[in-house]
Length: 259
Ligand code: ATP
Ligand code: MG
Image (cartoon, rainbow, N blue to C red; front, side):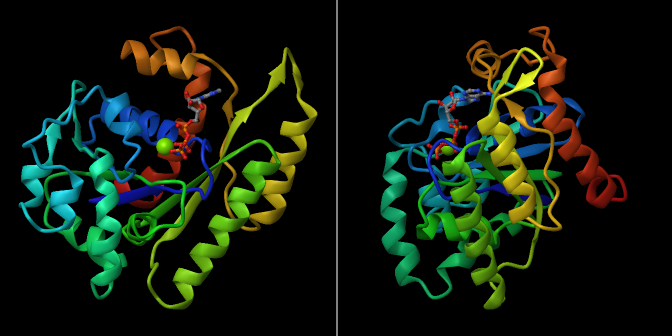
């Protein structure tokens, strides 16, 4: 099982959006995909239309080893797509992770238990540099860094790259950076907004040697696809899938096709 985490240290950078569309695209190709909602805001759980019931285990119980990992996995409404959900109760895991030796390794270790059941695991992380965020990053074989096409996005990218360097320097992060995903790239007809153009150029300069994938355009269609459960292609916007196709192309070359 290949684990991919979307991380970016600011709110609204496109982490959950990237996770959702990448997972759906992989599932459509026939890969068995496990999604992990590692954000107490639980947007991903919501996007998948999953309702957590009071007595059902979530990521919290999985991380605390109160249940077997498999017991925290639920089928989604989409073929080939499963979820370990979360709700705002996940917040209390911070304390557990900080007081556990090598708390950063907890998710990685737990996911090993189900590595033979899935082809790909996609982890959505919270925007703050918390213990949950660290354990989500450390679990990754490949890291995706979505960043808004703005100065806030650039700042988020810089902070995330610094964190990855820190984690590498203590041998905690052993994965690689799959790519930067510019988010909300704005075009007016055939003209790219200056702000988008400048910030994406800056992303390329900041992320030397890191792939900058085709951007997620500023568009209501992504939300529409989530709300209706249809794909962007089914909605008549196949071009909007380009960022995820590029990511899958890279993943297949490096990992998936020679399995
Ligand atoms: P958080 O840090 O809060 O978890 P995030 O990094 O996961 O945020 P998303 O939730 O993916 O970011 O997206 C942020 C917001 O942008 C959401 O409200 C979403 O509906 C909206 N959005 C998603 N895709 C697009 C798009 N292509 N164009 C414009 N807005 C979008
Ligand atoms: Mg999110």
